[in-house]
Length: 311
Image 1 (tube, rainbow, N blue to C red):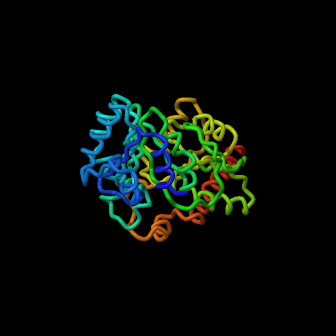
Image 2 (cartoon, rainbow, N blue to C red):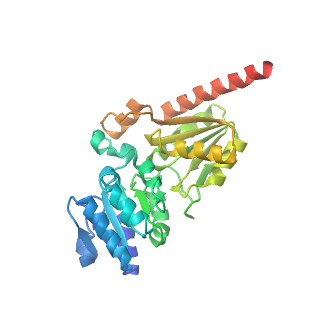
Image 3 (spheres, rainbow, N blue to C red):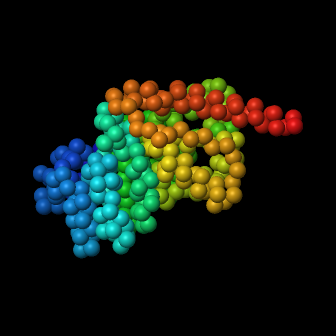
């Protein structure tokens, strides 16, 4: 089953669900002919779509609105904030080709500040599935939630088995380890998994956490990682500012935690457009390059700890 098939199943079960798009039908090409007037295409008008979705929600509907992530979160930001965020309406916003999934598109189409924007809106929640399986496991809970949600659409095939038991605000611990924790979300889960295998083959014990929802965030799993492992790594296809690294920094201040945190993100730059694998290679986000980066930082941290113990 894919996203479109599950969505159709949920639509048939619940007459409140309405599908909207701002001329972005890539994930739902077959739905218009199957669901009749419960499908609305507003054209390239993200603000209008969001306003319409809010109106439908006020009338008891569950609108699921689709658009390219960059235009959905930036062009329609004020409408999301005012029409959906302030009243807390249960609108579901599905952002297509977020982060590196935009691959061959230039900076205007790269949604790498979307998490920062959406988590800054009170009442807005964020779901970032690791792959298609993860997205399908969480979709029903997200749609049935009475909260507004931004969903980073991800239909990549899964690289590892996910726990089908999905709970909003709960992360998925893929592997337990004592040396290093890799915290990640979205499509880079595959590369994080590959990095984990490489690091463990080098003799390190790695904890890999798929955060699933970034808001609400699973505070407990991050606190435990900070207390139980020697180093944390935040891995994301997002600007360094405002994303997962910022979330972890806020939690460290909130709970007075101390540990080494290594961010792997886009530091004040957009990525070079290319095919996805070439993007990952050029920007240093392949499993191998991530593992090398982590290992270098871990060895430097270990040497620093040894040096301090001698003083």
